[in-house]
Image (cartoon, rainbow, N blue to C red; front, side, top):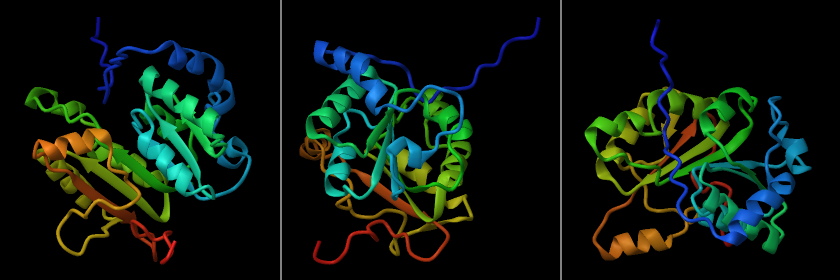
Length: 240
């Protein structure tokens, strides 16, 4: 009998403690704010009820960065993907409380969703902030930012669209830079090495503030798909 080869997952479902409010939100609000579970391709205009520039955040955690972006950019659609139910429940509660009608949630693995359910070339910005660094060498094959995954992300970006990554592990930042440099259609928006200062689109989280107090570094990488414009904060108008 031939062995079954399962795809390497970029995550482990560490559910942690889910509060009753988060559990209720997950059970009652996904129908309203989630991506339908049907296998057909997702029509973004139909999903959001409008055509607008679209942000995709993968692994949004508790939703802190995603909701900050949504508050600052009500003229954008925001789609978040996260596998962990406590974070999804927390984000759903925030969406409901703040009436963030331009935010949608997909609570499952990003890879099959991007590969089969999104039509290529629809996304204006992709954020992947602090993915699991899998620090042990034998586990690093599980890291999310690998050539095949970045090829999938690039496929989803519109020409001029932006891919913004951040990590607090320096060796992972080096790997990210190498992988991004291997995509000929991606252009580094930094003119001074592979990294950029933290842009306003990525809020300073409580986790990051704690790391700074402990002397930890953070590395931001911002690359765009080849086309005119699309730099990391290009949609921020001077004086906004």
